Length: 463
Image 1: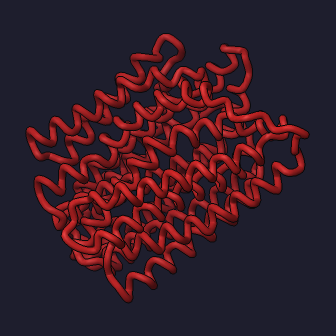
Image 2 (image 1 turned 120 degrees about the horizontal axis):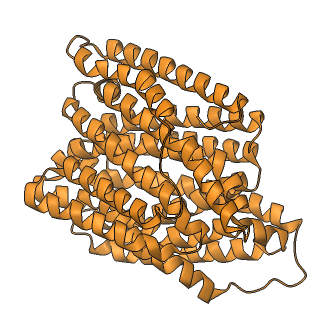
């Protein structure tokens, strides 16, 4: 499926990026006042709406046909069209962001939204495409360097002017730069396969693929980011800073895990699902489920146990109330990425309309519960669980979601003991004690998971 070298390169790159993720949250909590931190999470949800609903479905279409376009010599022309599409969406986002109800700095805020839409679109499409096409080292180099540059640039800019808009402008500008470099790298790769005449984009095929994804992603946005607008309305920006820190950390941790899994497994998955053989496509998804679902469950248990120590390490005493949101967010994220894993069936079968209702209904569950109870984290968890179960019900006749009991036992044995961290939090008060416990627990957890994974690979079975 992938070589040992690929695994080492991608894993090391992701470990560095997780460390940068923690450093980023440390910088955010240190540099931004609570009001601005709340605004930061609020604006991320606005940026995410454009990314998920408008850009994401077209980007998934780009990934789905990447290999065939390269082999047909059409990658360069399609990459150029996607870049133009991203630029247009960015301009529209900048204009619409002027409608955000903020009393001041609306010009900077709208610029931040537009730049981040362009930067996130380009960086998160062109650079990962290198990995999908087998250029793992280039992918890790560009992605890791980009994250370092983003952290340094945004921290430096915000130290002079501590506002959410300035952080996001620096972030988006750096993302755009590295997205452009990724585009040129992809362009050079495609140039070696250039066709005499490039065929036009099949707009009807794109629309049939992307429109249902866009509709489903309205629900995804409501589940994952729409709570920030609701939280700002019901509890204000300062409380949103606490909620957003906990849930945002959970989202970032699981997104990093999900991205690593996609980097390792999706090149093979998309290659296998490009076939016309339905049994081969179903087998490819079942293998993916058995590889990833147990790992995701293990990480949810581990994150719950060390949640207080993650918050203490990052923010000290300033946001101690955020750890329950991180713990609940870990389980929300578990169901989110299991839902994404299930939704790959619809993408491989080119039947993306099947995911629309589960995500929209899940979003309604979340937002309805927030309006009724104002229990933000619990409402998100309920909506994510509902969406995952509905997706599973849609596709249960095509595959099996069963995980062997031996694997579930191994997960319990290796991950549940870390829940003791919830009882130790009152004993470890100093930040260095929390950090030491977090590092030790992470090393033990990662080492155990790696040992089991390597044993499973040697036996040619799924962990």
